[in-house]
Image (cartoon, rainbow, N blue to C red; front, side, top):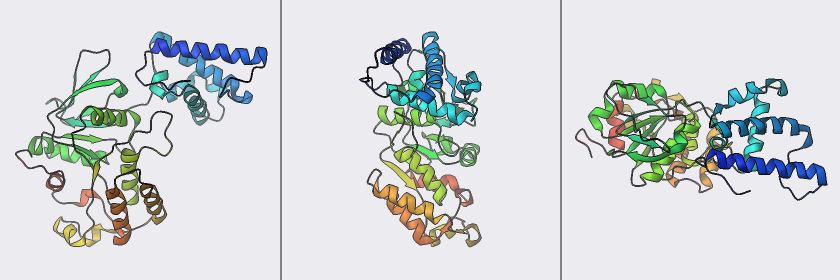
Length: 328
């Protein structure tokens, strides 16, 4: 089967599902072994049940979340949602389709604020991410995979690891003072809609610089790696990469003192195994070498700290992004 795209028309995808089922039935009637990727018999009932629900949604033009899909067949999955997710993953791999192409959407948790408007396929209404009535930003749309156009005067995109950082910058008026700029947070490990939105922004505005600000610790850099290199456990068609993202990390002790990060704010480095696994991942050449150097620097420094400790965080981030109060 040819790979599907997240924006493929639902009825076309439904037709492919129907053709697959016909071929699958042919296998059992004729014992023909030419059909590839037939699910193991022990999970066939669950596979067909999930596939039937997917087909119904495609025909109706509706969607559901992973959780909702599980509850529609809860009696078939005594082991919990993880079993349902495994079956859906098998369906995605069989059809070489990302989840949105099958009508299954992730619950969005990302936030965005700044000079950015989004237009989705099939809509004539632009979503404004910088409205005055939304001082804390707006939620990333669950259907971010359908973004086809963007409008922005932003000089850069600044991705923040945590919601606390995002909230702090919003409260301090970062966008108004240092903009035009776009702030984004996945509130920890980024959800799929946030990564779809950033991927669309990178694709539609390849000239726009991207920066990533995370805590100076293995956990923060692992989150950054998900943005930059994609998830290590991604589903079919969802392993997005943001090439050219610049890390904002400061590990020089003298510079940290000047930024207000005292010795008591610095914590001895733990989770060295996680840091070393990141070294191995960055060493593969799949990311900009600057990420490898940043991880090595953290290991050599032997301490960690949170960005929240920086006294004038807005000015620090703006300086690293090349912004000033009057724009770039």
